[in-house]
Length: 144
Image 1 (cartoon, rainbow, N blue to C red):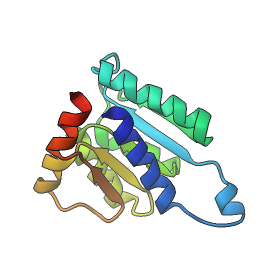
Image 2: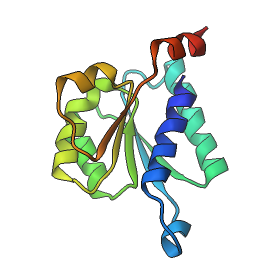
Image 3: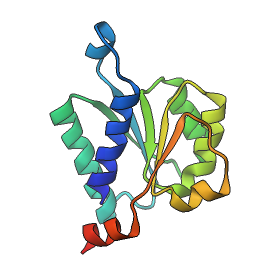
Image 4: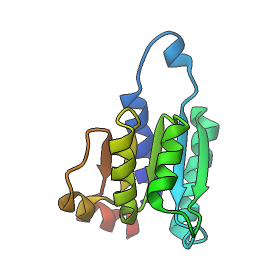
């Protein structure tokens, strides 16, 4: 599942950032925000392995940001937006309020939230935020 979600997130970034000439030759920069409490979890380790593979296979520059305990999600996402990454992504729907605040402050920055099915119901999302989720039968296939 994490590799599938990661592949979807990166594919979305490349599709949205398409271009030609010098723009197409540009190396894409992706920031991945992880929760400080769950970095050692198997699902996060798989996501990080997928990011490393993206660096190797797709020539993508990836920065993995572990959320500092005493820092708000909003300030983390706004800080990454100021650094002009091509994509800022997170696999956690709990981070949606921070993503939405940063997305509204930086409308030219692209954000992706994984597992966003429930979170999308509770708020109107700006156009620069995409949510990814799997259907229940897809989750069962991946887990089973």
